[in-house]
Image 1 (cartoon, rainbow, N blue to C red):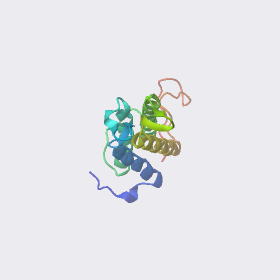
Image 2: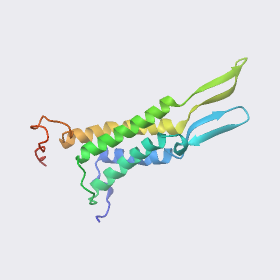
Image 3: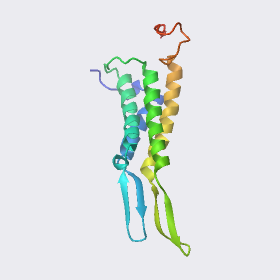
Image 4: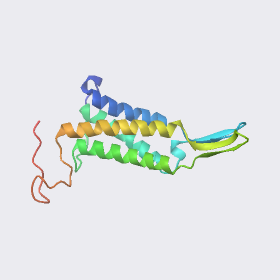
Length: 167
């Protein structure tokens, strides 16, 4: 196993890996909560139904890029690293966005004084933001890699392997 050196990561690689690290931290922050003037309660990312899956995909994408660039031997995948990073990052961010959109939110007030409010909290918003940043960087990595998406048939007949990438 190769020794990990931060210098081996490009700026975009560092952003993707950093987004994964921030997503890991945000899974422990409040994702949903309710509050009254005398009491408040919240749940972390691990307690918001399927939302944690998206957060973990964002974390895994960051870890994958860090391991890939550090020279660690990883198992062969049917798609190239650029496709894997973009796909996992995009899927994770979409799952988090769907969870955010499906969380109920609102407030109740009497005479202009709010006595109950509930809705998304800082953890899910942070995860969504770093997921979007990671998707943007993953798209840049994918474009720079010159890889084709696995279902693309522009390289030949369907079922034919793509030509090897020049490096």
